[in-house]
Image 1 (tube, rainbow, N blue to C red):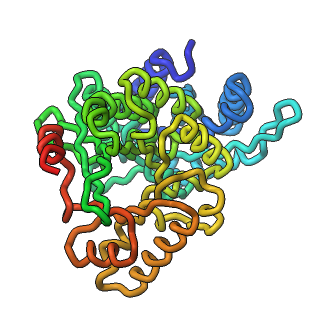
Image 2: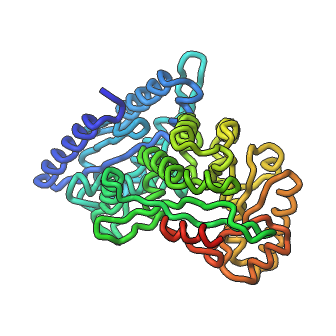
Image 3: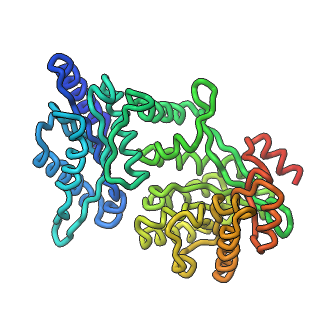
Length: 421
């Protein structure tokens, strides 16, 4: 049986549904926990696939041994475990269950000579408080897991406010899988302009999703959701290949033009991204030097050594590396000395307020000057008016991106922009 296969899902879903039917008569509460092994990809890279499988197996065993009234425990994905616990006394004690899961994994796993700490995030939902069907409860559990991961709180508990059954996240993920299969995703392209010449030198590929009701779903909704599952790998592969396919001819016709593609924090720690990039460049015949890979500054924080190593391997393909949203994480002067990057994008939260906030203006000026000392090109993102454009230009910023220059363009409008520039 493959790790986290459909069979696992079916067994877990069936067991949960049976417990719900039983609880309807007994009027007992059922808790659903989704446990995410946070650094699973790093474990696989560092210790190898076999050790990674041992880590998951040991985690399941420890959870099974330390928790009471476990009715089902299954591996739902390579790094996620589902647990059903029956007869929960009161909803207020849910947090104790989540804390017990975390505490039961507190001691490092010993495999051979290695001591491996197993860090997890936990999402929880309760029947009937957060839903009356298996899909609703799982949706609530995954939504609360997503919240816990974003806020770094260790665990999250489904909320009874808003959508009572907690199914939005679950349904959105299923819809996103279907959108991939039915080719309902598309890319828009937002230009970056060289401030010294006024020429467009690059376009950032931005993913868009046309939902089944013909409305567009915000990337702010579906990208974080995809990052909590293996969908982010499928989306990334789709984005890289689509961008290079669509841009292949414009890039070949204009050697000074490049396309920028975003890589999520999870993707950058998986060495398979290097193979994906190399393969796509070869398939679509794109010059590697015309590809920019953007990584958020926050991605550097999980494991800087591993992140830098993979960034350098990507850079070795010929592609350029850009650090996106700079200033929002725990910025360190050491980054400038060691990071394998070519470009730095100052986060729009500083750019948008710099005209009215002198402190933000000083921060932007300092980042530009320091970046130039270390040979980094600087892009101001979020430029939305001429005053801000003039400010960053006067500071010596290399390039700008934002609504004042252009909103993201669909492919037809992109071609028109390119023809007129």
